[in-house]
Image (cartoon, rainbow, N blue to C red; front, side, top):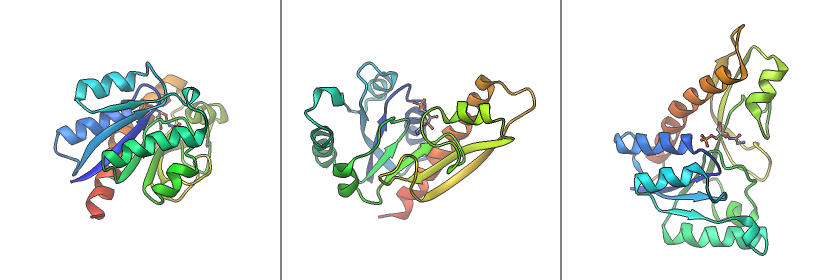
Length: 190
Ligand code: GAR
């Protein structure tokens, strides 16, 4: 079975959605590793609870970004990871990981890219008063939330929408869309 690593920086609710899908036999891949750049993030607790090994490294404790990513790469190799799944990993992927995993890194972003890339995409869309926003899953390149789009799903902004209600709707869509897309990618490739 193909092995994947999930990268997270915060709450890890998308990581949890993948864990739950795997437990329910809806994912034909194994989550072999959770990588986190933020010691203390709730995603680490989720990994512990699910019995998934986690690698927690703060870039601040590394000599350089290259050094940071080399440490991650070593662990990915040891764990025989074939696909990197970014799930709320709030850091640009650098040259070290990009060249080792070319075309094998995917990300989920809470907007209809190319609209609202970067931080707080939900807040950006809310403030812009767009009528439709959504969720994008895409391959990762050297840019910020750029790279070929794999899947998108729209979320309608209702008249009385609040920032909080919009966020809840976006997360609900993410938690269904991401496991579905990862399942398709895992079953498509050998
Ligand atoms: C998710 O909404 C994800 O789409 C977003 O961070 C949140 C993480 O939530 N990612 C980005 O904004 C990437 N540019 P989670 O930690 O609960 O999965």
